[in-house]
Image (cartoon, rainbow, N blue to C red; front, top):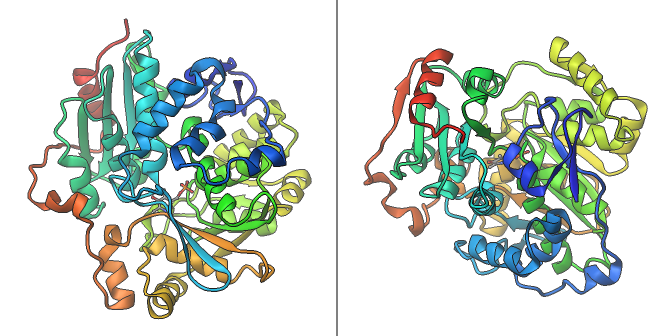
Length: 466
Ligand SMILES: *Cc1c(COP(=O)(O)O)cnc(C)c1O
């Protein structure tokens, strides 16, 4: 399998190349040249497999010759062996129609672990075959940073620099990053907002003085390998609810459109999906795009679901590319227009293609709190605010009552304890596996929101090419 850029002019790469590159050098995102497709019989034969075996089965077509089936299975067993639940992503029934897929049993309590635990091992595997040492630079509003740091801490030939906006991540989130003392982990608190941090990272990817000296890699969901790993749990849930003989709908708390795009990929691979419900908070660019075709970014409003406080959803480009006949030149022009005006219209083909599978819903703070209370009062489950937005959307999407609806539970409630307690009066308990987080030593650098200071810091600690 090889990978092509959504903007049509970067070189095609194999799976290992796409994993290490992150972003394509024409500014586009890598996608597989075609979608692999399983037959009904092949899907039926996956029922009952342990998670790590299912993962290897679903991902093998994407990996191609870059890993043998035996090696891929060793890596999935290692990645998912660290999860606190034997089922890795257990499914829970809430009422006759509604289900929860718990994706937060990894080491840092959010679904990001499902993909990043594997990505850390893939980096180590591919870097071990030679080439330049990798310098990962990322910005985080909380969950990606902790999951990525846990996944690469102590691994050979990779240094990670994670920028977070000083004072704007929760204490649990900060400590999950800053108490990792491995020498290849560099936490940087910058003066400014998440958008400021992200702008500096993007600038570094485009700064030849840095990219000539260092091989800079990405851990956010522009990296294809992350989405690939997330396809697996759609199969896991679908199989448990009767796939391939029965359809299932999914409701996905959405920010950067990575998680729900993995559901779209599962559908292309043959999993019978009735609907993908895109759940947004008041930062609703995707809801507007899917209902009216108008994709225009406003300013970000901070909410109790900060991982969805996004106005530009990077992975939406992958969907627009696929629905628009995979025309890289057309996407390059469409995205250039968006980058200059912060607004674009979807084409008819893109709108109609999206409407065939996606539905969307927007939840404000009251909707979120109501869904949190419903789950606690009716089922005894404490949800995190992101998951509550997904559940609200699941309950209001008008899905045929005969079709099960699975809400992706993207974070553990204890990661957002204050918001959960405000809505329900219940304080969620941090799981024992992160128990001594508040006693551990922290290490971080504090820098001004100034690109030169950050580039100097990275250059002083990173390992150059060659
Ligand atoms: C990252 C995140 C999301 C959004 O996922 P995307 O793939 O960016 O759409 C939702 N909920 C939680 C808890 C997250 O950490």
